[in-house]
Length: 138
Image 1 (cartoon, rainbow, N blue to C red):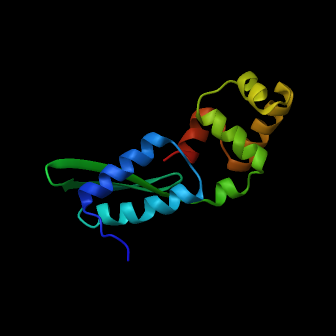
Image 2 (cartoon, helix red, strand yellow):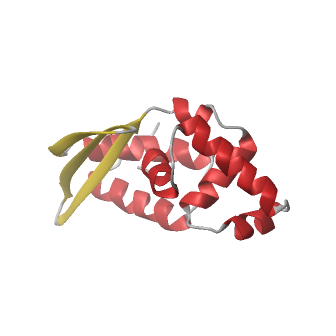
């Protein structure tokens, strides 16, 4: 039988997951029920359309602790167009890394990364790193 978490416990666990900075299917399966518990007591503060989808801001409280969450529901079609290598390069670009740093991390030449960046921009219909971050980041 699953333990029902209070909003306070769910918020604490989400914070712990966020600070662990671990990603992957096992971590994501832990996040969904925690968010569901938190969102059940939230009020919507605002909703806006963005290029990548819809953003909404929620406010809630867990006992004495108030919190707000900004969520972005985006179309995943854009990232599905990218190859695995392009997705990795796009992630590094969003982190603010230079082409040389990305090349070094990936073990490829700077020209290869430059070519991948051109392909990423073309496939996602963006013209700058800023536009790329806006398109891919919540």
